[in-house]
Image 1 (cartoon, helix red, strand yellow):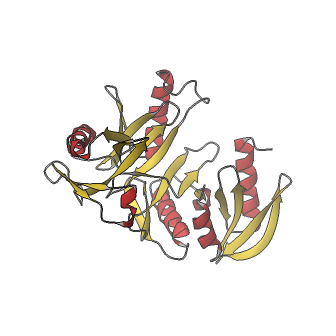
Image 2 (image 1 turned 90 degrees about the vertical axis):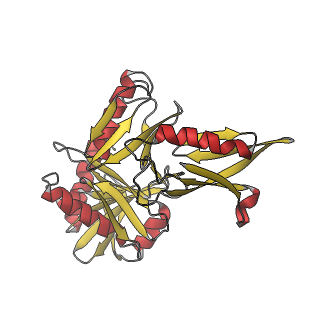
Image 3 (image 1 turned 90 degrees about the horizontal axis):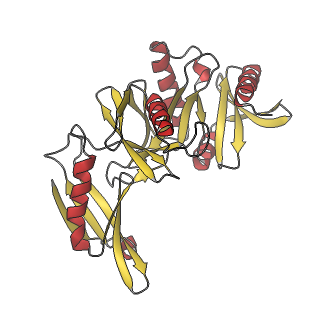
Length: 308
C-alpha cells in the first residue's frame, strides 16, 4: 500500500488543505485501487489539527505528516478478503460503525472481535446485525432506542454518502425487501445492490428512478421474491430527485385515504400517489395500474404501519 500527502490546489483548500493519495493495488481487487482522501483542518483557538473520514471512521493528527501512517493502519484493518467496504451500518447514538463488504453474490457485515453476518440481501444482513446488537445492548431494547442506518462509501474519497431513496416491499404475509439507492461518483448513474447483484441505470430526467425500480422488480420476480411488481416502491426520495421525476409525470388530481389528500400522477400505464414526509423532507411513492389500485395499496400499507 502506498500513501502520499499532497497540497490541495482546489478552491476548498482553506478547509481541505491536503489530499491523501492512496494506492491499494497490491492489497485490494477493486476496479479502481486509487483513492483521494480529503484531509480537513480543524481550528481550535490558536491550535489546529487534521482529520480524515474513511468509511465512517475518523483519522486525526496534529501534523499532516503523521496522517499517512494512521491512514495506512486504519485501511489495513478495514480491508477484508481484499476488499474495502461498499456500505457501512451506523449506530448513531452508540457511535459505532460496522463495515459491509460485497463478496461474490453475498453481503457481509463484520463486528469487532465478534461474529460475521452474511446474506444475499443487505436488508437481511441489517436485520441479523440489529438482532445481535440488541442482544448485546449496543442498540438498546428491540423496537426502541437506536437503530442501524445504512450509508454508501464513495469509491474515490472513501467518505460516506446518504441514500437518495430506498426501494421497499412491505406486504403482510410476505418477506420484506429493502435496498438503498445511491448516486454514482460522477453523478451520471444511480445504483443499488439488490437481488444478488449491483444494478445501475444512467441518470436522465428523473425517470431513472422508475427505470431502476423496474429493473429490480423484474429480478425479484424472476427469483420468486415478488408477486406483484407494483408492491416494490420508491420510498424516502430526496426532494431534488422527486422534483425531477415529478416534471416527467402527468397530474391526475388527488385521492383521499384516511381523511388525508394525496396528489396523483400517471406516466403511460403507471399510476402513482405521493406521500410527503415533512419530518424527513422525503417523499414516498405508491404505484399501481389505476387510481383505485394505488388507493388500495396505500390503504393496506397505512394499516400495516398503524397510521391513523
